[in-house]
Amino acid sequence: MHGLYVMATVGTVIASAIVAICVWRLAEKSDRGWLAALFVGALPMCPLAYYYVRLPLDEMLRDLLGRTWPYLALKTLEAPATEEPAKFWLALLPYFRARLNRQNYVLAAVCLGFGFGIGEMWFIARLVAPTTPDLPWYNYFPFLSERLEVCFMHAAFTSLVLGRLDRLPRGVGLAVFAHWLVNFPIFVFAWLGIIGGIRGTILTLWTALGFVAAFVFLQMQYAGKTTLKGLLGTSVCPDCGQEYPRPLLALNLVTYSLERCPHCRRWHKV
Image 1 (tube, rainbow, N blue to C red):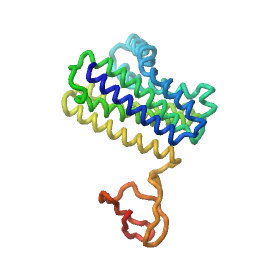
Image 2 (cartoon, rainbow, N blue to C red; image 1 turned 90 degrees about the vertical axis):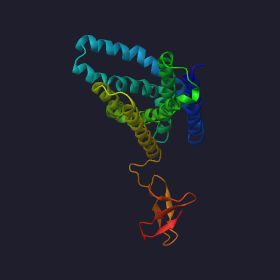
Image 3 (tube, rainbow, N blue to C red; image 1 turned 60 degrees about the vertical axis):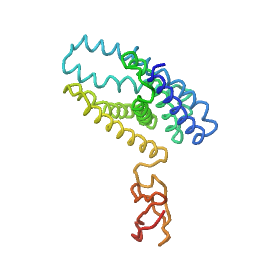
């Protein structure tokens, strides 16, 4: 078996485990069944959207505009504009829509995003493997890390829609724009003809930044936060006894951290 397929299998197990843990630990018992159904339903959506929507759309635009700048500009929107609806449309079906609420929409987005991401993982592996040397599976760890990061980003994009079902056009627009923003550097490098190590390094860092942003954003939504303040919970100052939101940045000293109380302005161990 090609090393990419082995790594895609590892990625599938890890991503599925993340979804299972989230659904089992965080979802209401009555929600687990339909959340699992969303996850399974999203698995084939990537190749279906690519072959039956994206490729015909690209062919139509190319025939209409030729390989001109307007065509190249619209091409940057093809992936976001086709992949986002391919994920969230399942949640709009009456059975699922009736069960979505402010408490479970983030978990629904995780199920849809990770299901789509796993399908995309295998889709890319099957496209790339025939033209890639069959190296030992552990050589493809960058593929694994990138695909898992993308799963989190897909979940975050979808949450932008599910959290705004009463304002669906706005939610879809935000999801498409966020997706476009993550993909845009790829097109910039292609237009400028930049290849090699510097391209890979920048794209890796950009993807990692997108993963961190998506992870924090999902946490904020699940916690019902509109700002980063209080995202990590609260602490009680041992000096003045007042409660305060734990800071995102603190001095980590392995077994404990040093935090500054905003009330008495003293540093203490946590």
